[in-house]
Length: 74
Ligand SMILES: [Zn+2]
Image (cartoon, rainbow, N blue to C red):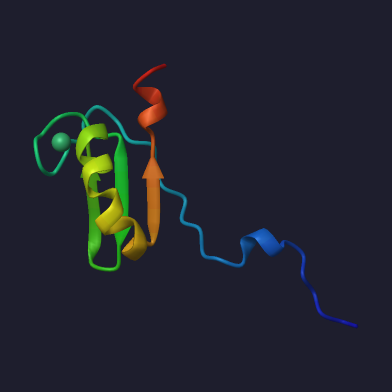
């Protein structure tokens, strides 16, 4: 019994992503982005509307789905 399992929650590689800022713009409409999607091929950023619109398609292939849409109602 010498297996070291210090943090089982850390088995997936989690990237420290910077928070989205006003300088991040939706790739589709240019509005302020609140969702960042990290794909194997690169990053995409979307506004709340387009993030939701593309979620069904992109979520399954996303490495990281960073959703900051809660800032919208803050
Ligand atoms: Zn948009």
